[in-house]
Image 1 (cartoon, rainbow, N blue to C red):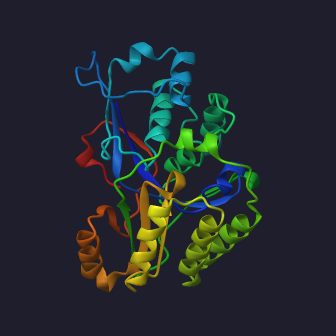
Image 2 (image 1 turned 120 degrees about the horizontal axis):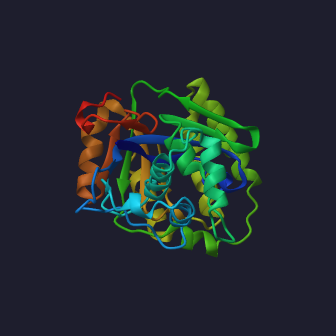
Length: 294
């Protein structure tokens, strides 16, 4: 048995998601690939952080022997920022023969039940990864919808900064925040996206600027985003991940993709996603990964 789970990146909605608010989360390649072997795997690479929801869930469901027969291919080499923890939790639900593993609300509920933290995660990672494409998520309104890419002629890039912050550790340090303005901006961005209006890119920038005002974005990341946006190559840009440390997201017109690639190369930013191809929801399959049609 094999499972592919897409990478994820927030367009908007991080932090608001912690309270079940509105978010757009894009699913992209490369995928996390998990495999259950018929015998003990000699290349067992599925490591679980002790105390994490995946660790606690595996103990409760008695999956220790199953884990000895599993392997994981992490295309990000454990550098984080794209939903590896969520992907592991999804795989464990598949291993446990959960019939509802593709239900985003069921997965989130299970994740929170196995969270031993005063600052639990939003659960939007796992929700987006089983929703696919551009996931519109609003837990407070029981909404989980898979949307298509609405902007022909516009591409987006996700690049790696080379830095990493552990999300679970970062959440523990968060102060109480007034998220009312962020929620308004997230809703406005979603409305713009659903209508295909170009104001979406402005709304992404406004959302990011509010994150900066709330001191939720690392100074180095702020400088890198500001430098990129000042180049005039991008319609919008933002830092992503815990503290805005891990990755950056940029939107640009498709016709200037060569110039954009040259910019990233010049500034030694590793491209993880480039274009507007969206990945579908997590999928169990038996063929080789190359045979799977997205």
